[in-house]
Every structure is written in structure tokens, then in C-alpha cells.
Amino acid sequence: MKIAIYSGSFNPIHNGHIAIAEAALEEGFDEVWMIVSPQNPHKKEEELWPFEMRFKMVELAVKDRSRIKVSDCENDLPRPSYTINTLEFLQNKWPRHQFRLLIGGDNLQKFRNWKDFQRIIDQFGLLVYPRAHQSENPFGDVPNIIHFTAPLLDISSSDIRKRLLENRSITGLLPDNVAKFLLQKFKTDPQKPVF
Image 1 (cartoon, rainbow, N blue to C red):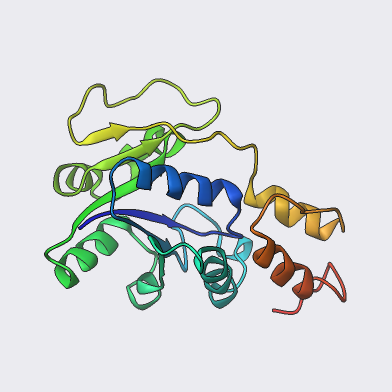
Image 2 (cartoon, rainbow, N blue to C red):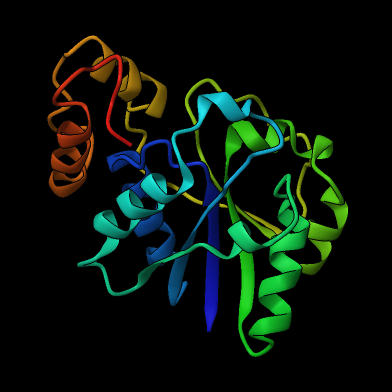
């Protein structure tokens, strides 16, 4: 099977993430595996909600989407979570699958800063979706880097977190069941959600 690996903090997952995963399926991938990262090496740990909560939200978001799966495999791998380690773990566990890393165009701009970036490109390849305000492709025309079209939704996890703290609406930004789950967590006191 051809599998697109969509790794992220998903802090929280939102409709933009789902739209990108669905667009990747339209590119001929059999499945998209959403890997919830316990600790992104490029983000501060205090910015992240608890791993279990983020994982639960991704489970809720994809539960009716049979070709989009959620994985917690990075939770058992050494931290910080380096993508090359995750990809090699997956390839060793499922040697018959063909894995390709799904990233945004903004991450492509910084991709040379990733651990073993060239090995990721050579061994697995990249599937790159557009992001607003992204610059030109810094890698040029590389066969193992595929660009595809995905909806440009103006939604961000940081904006959703801010809206929750300010007691503002999050309607339409996340799958309904995820929004309901989050609102329950923030119901009693937006400054002290029940995690």
C-alpha cells in the first residue's frame, strides 16, 4: 500500500488538517496515517496540550474516515520525535508498505534543518501541500518531492486555542465531535481546562 505519513502536534486537529489528508488520498495514496507527535523538536513542550488529549481528538476526527488512520507510535520512540526515526520505525514494522512524508510548503522552506533531511527525501520522498505566503521551492525539481493541490483553509491550531481561552466561537473550525470534546474540557474555566 502507498501510505502518506502526516505527522504533527495536532494541538488541536482542525478541518484544515482533515482537508489536507483527504486531498492526499486523491493523489493516489491508499491511506493517510496521522502520527500524533508527543514532542516536536521545533516547538516548546509547554505549548502542547497533553498527548493523550491530542491523540483522542485525532481519533474522534477520523473515526468515520476509513482511509485516514491515527497512530501513537511516536509516543514509544525516543524524544524529541525526529521524523527520520519515525519513518524508519514504520518501514521496519511494515516493510511491504511504501511510505511518503506529507508536509506543508512552509516546512519545505526549513526542511534542510530537519535531522537527516536528505535521507528522508531519498528513502521516502515528500508529498508537499501549499501553504499561504510560501516562497519558491528551495529544492528545485527533485523527482522524490511531489507537490499537490490542497484547499488553503485559513485555520490554525493556535487561533483555536486562543479562541477557547477568550471564550469565543470555534464553530466550523474543527470536526463537530472534536469541537464538542474541546468545549467540554474548557466548560468550567477557560483558563484552567480539565485535561
